[in-house]
Every structure is written in structure tokens, then in C-alpha cells.
Length: 304
Image 1 (tube, rainbow, N blue to C red):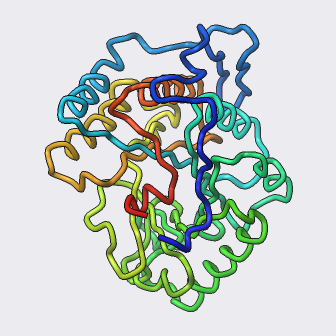
Image 2: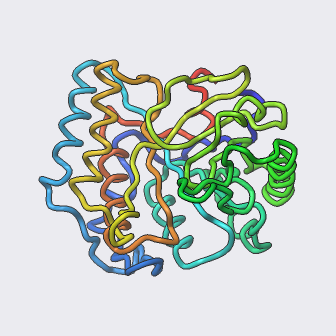
């Protein structure tokens, strides 16, 4: 994936098994839906009951006994401008010292976002469709890249969106498409490399790492928002269950073991439970010897 533009810079002052999340007694208390965390201001971090994280720890121990390392990657969707939730997201990322892929909506991107991200060395920008507009037919699930649209219209939008992000985020834009609502009609997939998009990410275990020449796929597998319910945190058991299910399937060879387990977040929609989960999940996976966080380039093409 040599034409990928965004690569996380090497960490400095951090060794495996150590990080700021565990060097202090607590991180911060995070308020509901987008309130800014108070890292380093004396607040005790909220953490899950130990039992909530036990299945994840046991599964990582199983990887460790095999001498294997489970890779993880992180994608956050629906970015367009500077919001309180964005500050919370970036602060947690810095505390954990892991790479983040921020899916930005090209048609809605605001000038201030580029300035806000320029100092974030480990943040890559990926293309979140074009305008996050629903083009699905009546009764169909929402999709911007829905079947039946004019190919010329779709490609023109994606090209324009890519050009806008490339200009706004030089050095941070990765040529990866994250379709809104995680849906893209099959008819468009083979067209993506021809317009310079060489990565694709949706949701669920991938069937092929390279479905067409020059196109790499790495999906997300853990969605922490209860979209069909209260649109808040889905809960500790379901969230950890999603993580463990993909890790077990990788370890047992039922899905592609090389596909990094992807965490999907939506900073604009997070309540306090979402932020608490992300903090605890990062703490466990960042310190366990059988877990490693990778950037989007490595997630898409581990051999790159």
C-alpha cells in the first residue's frame, strides 16, 4: 500500500506494557455526549467492574499462550468540524498513545478542523463518503453509495471529496473510503482504485483482504453505540462481546486472522458510558503483551 499517505510516527518514551493511562491513578471523568474530559485535573476515572473486562483479558491471554499478537485499529466517524466530542476523542487518543483514523465528511468539512489536527501526528484522515446523504430507495437501509446511482455522479463526488480532503489535510489524508452507514453497493467497489482510493472499510469480518487489484480492505467489528435503542452506550457485555467474538474467530481461523480488530466510535454521539468503555478498552489492550495497535496503513496491508 505504498501510495497511502498517512503513517503514525514512532512513539517516543513509551515501551510495550507502559503508558500514561496506567502511570497515574486515574484519567478523567467524562461527561455526557461530548463534554470535554479533564485529563490530569485530579478527577478519578470511571472504570468498569473488573468482571466486565475479564473475557477480553482471558482471550488475550489465549493469544499470548500461542505466541501470537492480536492487532487492533481505531476508526471514528462523522467528523466535520471542531466539537467538544472531538476534544474528548483526541485527548483520550493522546493519553493512550494509539493511532486513530478520523472519518471526515468532505462536503461538510470546516476550515478549523485542519488546523486542529495538524499537530496530531498519529491521527489519519479517511474519506467518509461525500456528503453523508442517503440515496437508498424507499424501504431500503440508508446508504450514500446505494445501488442504482449514476456511476459518473458517484465517482465525481468521491473524486471531489478526495481532492478536498487531500488539500485540507496534507500528509494526514489516507486514500481510504469509509462509506456512510458502512454500506457500499458492489458495483462501485471495483471502480475505487481507478480514482485513487486504495483502501475500503465497512463493518464486519472481511471476506477478502484484496477484493479487486490494488484495493485493500480492513473493517471495524466493534460498534459501541446502541443505534436501535437509546442511541447511547450499548453496554459493557455487548461491547466486550463484540471484541471477543472477533478475536476468537481470528484465533480459531474462522475469519481472516490477519484482519485487525476494529473499534468504531462516533464522538458526536457518545454518552458517558461510551467514553468510559473506550478508556478502559484502550487501557487493557494498550498494556497487554498480546495486543498491538496499528495505524490504518498497517491495518489495510500488514505487509506494507
